Structure formats: C-alpha cells, structure tokens
Image 1 (cartoon, rainbow, N blue to C red):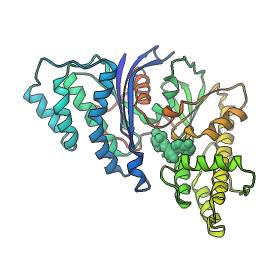
Image 2: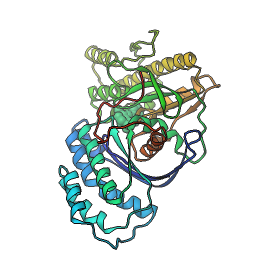
Image 3: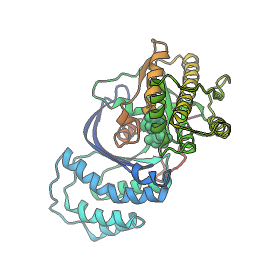
Image 4: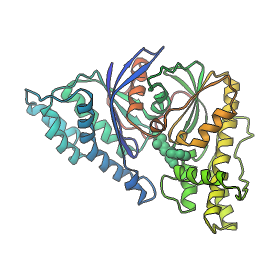
Length: 384
Ligand code: KG4
Ligand code: ZN
C-alpha cells in the first residue's frame, strides 16, 4: 500500500511517500521520499510555538513540500484533463480559511497527473487545532481531486510506530510497552498488539518536554529548551568542578505508574530564587541535575511497568527521546532481557514518515471514525 502522509500538528510541516506492507503481524515500511520543514527558528523569537503562526507557515509550506516529495518519489507528469468547475468550487470551499494554500493548490495540483497512491494519511490529533486543520483540509482537497481515501492518523501512534520505519526489520515482541515523551505528552502505553493500546500511566500535570522547556526559559535558554538543557548537561559531565544539586524526584515512590513534572519545575524556581545563576558553570550544574532527575524518574516508572506487565519490548518515542543521556541511560540501566527500540534522532521529533506508519496500522485495525474528519487537539490513544 502506497501512502502519502501529512503532518502539521505543531511546528514541523512533514510530507512523505511510503510503501507499507506486512499487515498487522509484521508491518514494515519503505521510504520512497520524505521532507520535513521545521519552523523552530521562527518560533524561537517568541519563546514558544504560536498556533496561528504555525498555521500560516503550514499553509505556505505544504504545496512546495508536496511538490518536492512527488518529484523525488515518482516524478511529476502533466495532467491531460482540466478539473471541472464543480470540483474547483468544492476545493475553494474546503480551503477557504487557508487562502495562501488555496492559491498554491490551484496553481499546481490540477495541472499534474494523479500520482500512484492508495491512501492519504493525515494527523488529526493530538496537537494544536489551528495547525492540525491545515493538514486535514489539505488532505481533504487532495482526496477530492485524486479520489484517494483519507486515513486519520493519531500523532502519538505515529511516534510509537516510528520505530518500524528503518530498513532492518525490527520485530517488536508483545506485550510491548511504549514510553511516549514529548512536549505535550508523558505516557506509558501497553501495546498488546499493533492497534491495541492501553494507557497505563501518564503525567498528572506537565509533560516531560514542557518541564525541559519551562526550566530552560527560567535560565534564559531559547525554545525548545530540551536540546539546550541537554547540551549544557553534557558540558557539565565533562567538567569535574560541577556543583551537585539535589532536586526532588516527583512520584518516584508512588505505587502507580503516573508521573508529575510541575513540582520539579517549581523546585527549580525556588532553587534559583535562593541560588541565583552567576556564571555558565551554575547553568550547567542545574541542567545536569534536571536531566538526571528526569531520567531517573522515567527509568524507575518504566521498570515498574515492564515488571508488572511482563513487557518484552520497550519503545521510547516522542521529541524528548532525542535526548542522548536518556537514550544511553535506558540502554545501560535496563535489564538486558528486554529489547529497547528508540527511533533515530530524525524520527524522534515530529516528521511525516511517522504518520504513514500510524496511518497503515490504523487502516488495518479497522477503527471506526466519524464520517467528517475534524481536528482533535486532545485526541487520546486507546483505552485507559
Ligand atoms: O514530539 P515533539 O517534536 O513535539 C510534540 O509532539 O510535542 O517534542 C517536542 C519536545 C520539546 O519539548 C523539546 O524540548 C523536546 O521535545 N526535545 C528534547 C530534546 N529534543 C527535543 N528534550 C530533551 N532533550 C532533547 N535532546
Ligand atoms: Zn510529537
């Protein structure tokens, strides 16, 4: 099955062409072409992601990205037939809130031949709704003109299934466990088989990525804070003259599998009130303490979940899984019996490929969706 996938849930615009096969028992993916454009530089100026700015950028970028992906994938040939007035009117209606996208769409898409694609997968949640709508409306317009069915894809299922994308066939053994750590989520998900999920633990307040981002801002680091904290923590580990700072490890001993990170952020705030930053070394010490505290909590809860559910594979995914220290620590500290899959750094943060894998699994799981696809900012992953 050839899938065109579209991701616009936050500050990355991603479009990919992927060939999926193997069914739910042994899904595998061949990348035909793929391109992601990050808006991070733009949002950096404002210290965070602005939904309407993200929406505008997605509207601007989607057609040029699709054009490149099609060129690199199948090549583009010209269409022999003009579109009917009726279809054009329908497209104008679908994209009426995205005038820039509509203009580019009408200038390019009707002129090219329908590509050889079986499905269009698009993220419909969770994420920023104004941003999600751009991708959804784009998919709807493409679906109409090319007569290709849409698969609504869950962004978090995308992070989770992104471990299936590399060429070497990674065989996930079930039951598997996913630790999903991103800017908006911190969840432990039990995967009984592909498409069958149960959330067994989650944050009660802030997500891990949020904790990284907010504490980074407190010490004057730019958005996104995770990679900045990680760089400083690396420096601290190389130096020897670093201050040891004890931060609380929230909920580490609680019997459940939930997390809490807002208390940790508050502790950093109090720490900074009593120990103002005087130099780079102070920043590095704090970054190291924060990264190590977060890692310890994540490992402890994940180990508890692995034991409780006798998981055979651990998947760590979501933007925060790009963190080198977290990756290394899990690999060093966890029982060698469990196989650990972490996506490549590129696949850890948002991209179009993960939406193709989520779309494929979703299509095969025969899930029921509402007839009209709508953006669902708080879309959840399976039962709780
Ligand atoms: O999955 P993602 O790209 O977007 C969401 O779906 O939220 O995750 C973004 C989050 C941000 O909070 C960012 O600071 C964090 O992932 N992140 C990191 C690293 N790279 C990205 N956190 C810690 N260390 C990193 N190297
Ligand atoms: Zn994400």
